[in-house]
Image 1 (cartoon, rainbow, N blue to C red):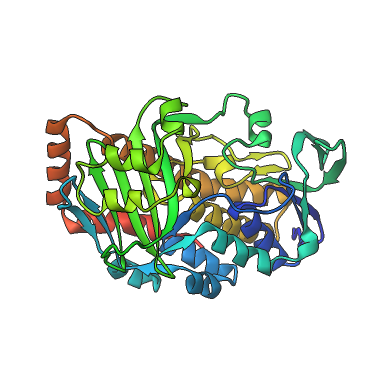
Image 2: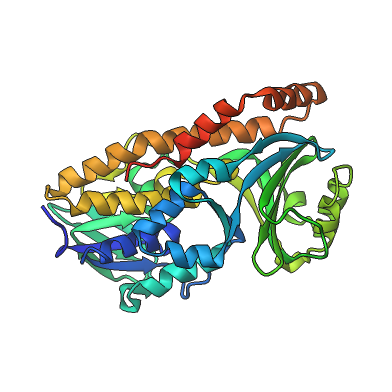
Length: 385
């Protein structure tokens, strides 16, 4: 049956939560988003949106606005520590099959586009979910301010540290990936970049990615293999990062030195072990709450957007709510599980530190047939909606 007149709550106003709210509102569903923060201030730097995400944004009616805020990229290059190409993926050629190119955008800009399309009265701030309880055909949701609501459907989009998921699956906690990461968006200090290419360097010292953004800005990230919650890494300055990567090809050190400490965003990288289910009665997990992945495939936000579109499609069908949620779960689990596992594997091999293994790895990537790479990207870009 249609859920258009039912009462739906979304916990979390990140990309997944807002995309889902938009998908449901476009269908006439009564939906309210509850966000723990007292105000919506996106935390993050750049975010990659592959062709699959752009297709999803088209379904949500916001692709044009998002593309207008971002920077379209035609290729993704992997480089060694000398700047020599390991792999050169022509994403434009494959993306043309889907009539979309890869895009990089500031996370705040993506957030703003979604917010502008959602009814303002649909978002309630300062509401931190503390407990959920499945009742007969509804869900009782409790908040830190001691208020409660009862809804027909609860969508948990509250991120990798999801309170809802950890209540439903206590063993599902974030697992450290083995490396830590710094990110920043800076003004281009005069670095000569290919304006349509995103590049990632795999060096023994660590990994560094650089992507151009509109307005002569650069989004960069740097990852170093370390132990969890390393205080030395937490306190690292851009100058210290530049010294760490001083043996890596130009213009990495120059770019890091052009960054101020207040521009740095730091965190350990983590994911969650793939879950066997996303649906628990009238509660459904979505985005990072359901399938948090490492960023090595640039699919975190993309998969949250896919979730939103697919869930909206399932709920719109003339079937029962139970059947609709089961269909959503069936369509999403295998794909997101594969991405979590492959992304974690790529993170592992990218941080090898033995020179012989690195040389062997790079050699394998260099001789890898384009047809194989194209097949992998085609699988990633193809979506069943």
